[in-house]
Length: 367
Image 1 (cartoon, helix red, strand yellow):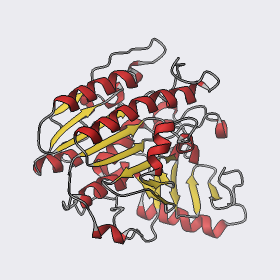
Image 2 (image 1 turned 180 degrees about the horizontal axis):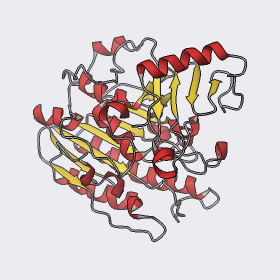
Image 3 (image 1 turned 90 degrees about the vertical axis):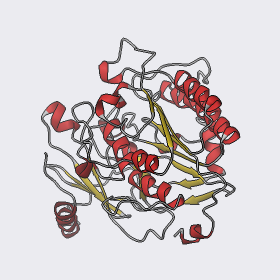
């Protein structure tokens, strides 16, 4: 698919800006809801068919920063898990290659106590805004405060090679209204619009002061009532799995890619662009290579750990998606993007095939 990438890998700047957008649906990157992100995606490599392996903030970000599925990095849920020291992270590899690593996160769920800070020289996780409606996990600081700190850092940083990760949490429930956002928008859409303002300021400052590769990714989506789920974490439907993935390479224009990709592909893509070898043990693959056909796996441990319900697991082969639950589900996403028609009743053999692959190549076991 992207073999021609090997011809350029422009090295005028090796700096990296990674922006993660919490709880951001792929279909909200529009001219109306997120004007900067929409415009930026038109000038970038826009992966329209990207998914998260898990619709939860801490495990999803751990997958981004390790290139591993949750079953391999072992962070299966928010707050009750901690990344083990022996699991290698992107920032640790970059540090060994001369990078200064700085992170600015916007929610307690990514607090340094969960060990995602390992390998960072700066890990700013101080929460400035604690809303009464949010439990301790969801303590947050708004996009304006987080971007202000990141912008001040960029203004003063004089080092040679930089990896900067900035995380925005605003679209996470409960949704707040913002005077900067159109008041006819839903409060969720207002959060997206408000966050977009800070993303714009950060990207523009980074490109002005440093230059380099910019990666913008959602960690998971939001159901907004689809399939009976108001937020995320319970089910494995497309509303919570599909996320934006936008990668801007220096001096390259915009392209749209419809091939399925996963958040675990960010780690090897960045290393491949920098000509740094990725560990052979990672699950992701570089988007700078021909991708070929592969299966994609999903899980969420929140239902079992919070409610004692069954743990959903899923697999997607680029056309069909299978969800393992006591009542199993099979969808043809080419014809049924809303996952309305469960085909398992008339596609039993295909269901058995997917169940076998899920058991053998991933897991259907709660750990």
